[in-house]
Image (cartoon, rainbow, N blue to C red; front, side, top):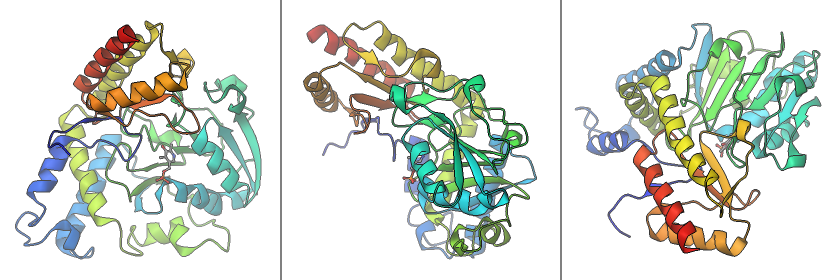
Length: 361
Ligand SMILES: *Cc1c(COP(=O)(O)O)cnc(C)c1O
């Protein structure tokens, strides 16, 4: 292995800001005079409680989260929420409304169907998930306890460019792969959640932002660990929280703040994405998967049309220091995941590489 850092286009876990990694490295054996690593601390100690509260305050400030929303730091991944959401919310009417626009919303929908009656607001599977439905295409169910969608489809590379209007039905959103990449009006949502390993922190932390009042209506057999009320009442500390990840999230948030907050992140997001899309658009070798108005600013999916050439591209890119460009097995082709921590320079160089590959092939 070389000691050079590479441009890592992995879909997650993925790149973290270098400043956050370096800070963590400098504090790894002795956190700010405490004489121990954050990995070794009691989660109930004052020194860790300060980290916990500061991280939560920073997130509230950066995302402008209203005071009637709880911020939970949980485990079991984003996938754990596929169960927790219906367990906690579907009991109100026994029904929920799902927009299936990709891999993870499809999995979430299947899981929810175990606990209640699901109506599909949209199912984009026929076009192999190449676009996002328009507001007027959504089949809304006013009887639903909640409306569920996934803001950015990590596998297929599409992203909602609007927040659906669902009237009085609470909105639940999986933002695992585009949280902190743009300003969001949190007050429009009932629940907004994200697995941390795409844009926030190492794997092991799930951030759940939930409007007060949605908790406390769980199905009777809801496991304690999946019960929002338990976690709200115990301040995410019913059991040991993922301490190290919470600390790393705090360091990532410092970097976000230093780089213009979520508005700054949004500028960088489209700077990176537009550069890559226009390079691929002007190519005669590569095709883009997503329709133009549905393109993701975080995961860019493309292919040559030949499996052999795709494999050659991935192999040569890896050798040139652009790693993890192979597409998800369900989508094929290539995928460049360009989350917040991907430097613009990494995308510039990838675009040069793409042009060179096209010339040679
Ligand atoms: C990665 C991802 C998931 C799954 O996350 P886990 O933490 O592995 O459960 C869910 N939803 C989206 C949008 C993702 O990108």
